[in-house]
Length: 220
Image 1 (cartoon, rainbow, N blue to C red):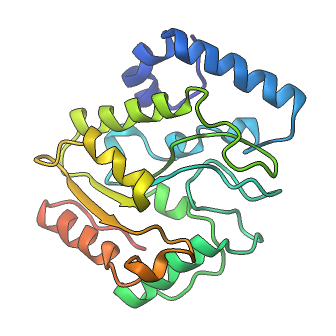
Image 2 (cartoon, rainbow, N blue to C red; image 1 turned 120 degrees about the vertical axis):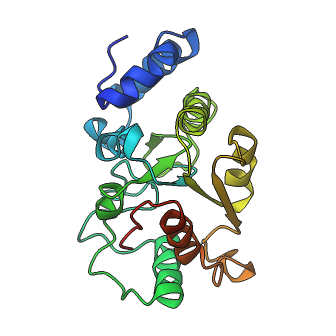
């Protein structure tokens, strides 16, 4: 199946694209885009992959669903395009970065600047109906993104996985902790950020680990 995705990912995931579950997923997604208002725009579904080839991945930040409000989702977990107000979880992420390493609040919430440095901003589900959180869960996306995590774990070394919240932390079973650094914290949502996300210092910990391994740190 010809999937429009960055070449290194295509080469590593070809075995997935030929599986029956993925073919069913493609059929579901095509139908939804033809008959519903779905986010992100179709050409941005694999945006995280386009900006961060497999061999460039330094850090994985795992989200669950794309934002389901107009103009928010653009294929990078937690990110919104310039001009879109910061969603609450993103605001808490940026607050923690300010506290942790002193980087001032940016002018916008577009995290493409992270993706281009090797931060793989992956949602477990890559599409969603407008205004209906979770509407594309359990259709095959999770099976696909679980395999993406396995591919990173098996083919790379010294990657930092930031797993925020119970859902993301379940993915730790897919990751070889002997080869990679797994950082866990509560989700940055206002409902849980005060229970340990704020103060987790994941951003300085990640950069320290990368530096120790001779890898250029991220400019957060």
